[in-house]
Length: 288
Image (cartoon, rainbow, N blue to C red; front, side, top):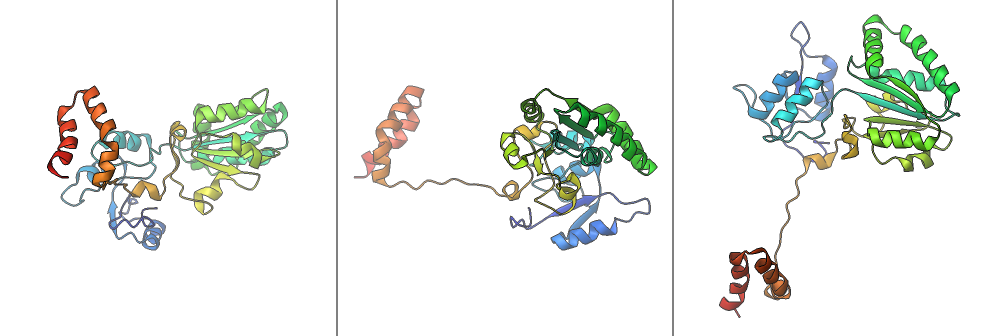
């Protein structure tokens, strides 16, 4: 989005590996995106360096991108000094499913965000007890198939932040989703395109059986930096507008100002601002 918006200076901070080198894939992606300024930094220290500058890292005007709880906290601390865009923290995924959904898809997709780390969330809300029971079984099966380092993330995160919720009606499921304002919301129902109209709050929607969150993570759809921690109730994902600034302007003629004079003078008098009123009236006293 920054490139599309025409931002001239784009900085990337990314952590080095133990050998001190940056992941080659990250470097290739940065090159393809046109990023020329890269620093071996991550975490709260990277936020501080970009927000205020150091001897080796010139400060920036805006910091975007997801991160850990520490990164989100650091961005919150500096938001009065630098723009922070979307407050994207630990990953969240919610699947809305009715009785027509495939339990295999739901269980697989609940693990997508959960494998990111111990503080991620993977949930399902459904009106079908049978679906819920089958999903619970498959989550355990699919988790056991993962390599140990990812399996540990999934087990811990789902234990703390995972849930399979059974509701009486699908309207309750949509109400739950709108109250949550989750980062990633999948709709696996009989009529997903109709049901998506019931969603008012979410970072991103993934509609139908063939829209796993992982597709959006990698290459389908728009930018993948999405609001978390209920922020989906107040804004959408990162986009070009986050890198654009709107400046309003006014160029009234004498006739135009005269048309508004009575209302402006009345408001100035009512609010007790005589200098405001005088600045308006003197335009007509000095010129004719």
